[in-house]
Amino acid sequence: MFAAVVVIVIGLFKDPPDVLEGAAILCAVGVVVSVSAWNDWSKEKEFRQLQEVYSRSQTFCALRGRREVELQWEEIVVGDLLKLG
Image 1 (cartoon, rainbow, N blue to C red):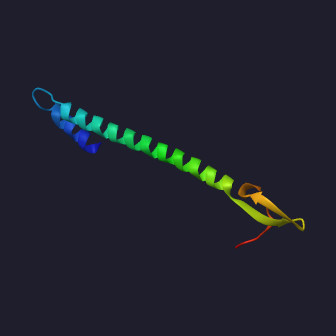
Image 2 (image 1 turned 90 degrees about the horizontal axis):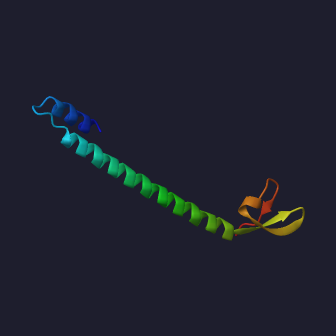
Image 3 (image 1 turned 30 degrees about the vertical axis):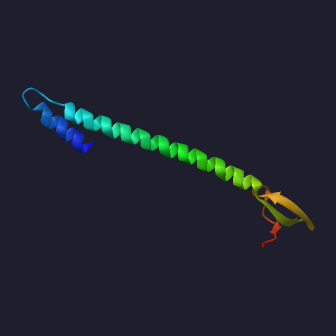
C-alpha cells in the first residue's frame, strides 16, 4: 500500500500525470487481500463443521449421582466424575 501511494504521488508530478502503475499496485493488493480473506473464511468454516461432527461423535462415561451415564462433552458439568482410559 505504501509503495502504491509513493508511485501515485511520483506519477502526479510527471508530465503528463501517470497514476496507472500505482492504481495497478492497489488493484493487485486488493485482489490478493480478497482472495486470502475468502480462503481463510472458507477454511475456518470447514474446520468448524469438522469440529462439530467430531465433538458430537464423542461420548464419555461419567459417574453422576452414583450412576454411570454416557454424556456428550457439552453435557459434562462440575461434579461429574469421568472415566479415563
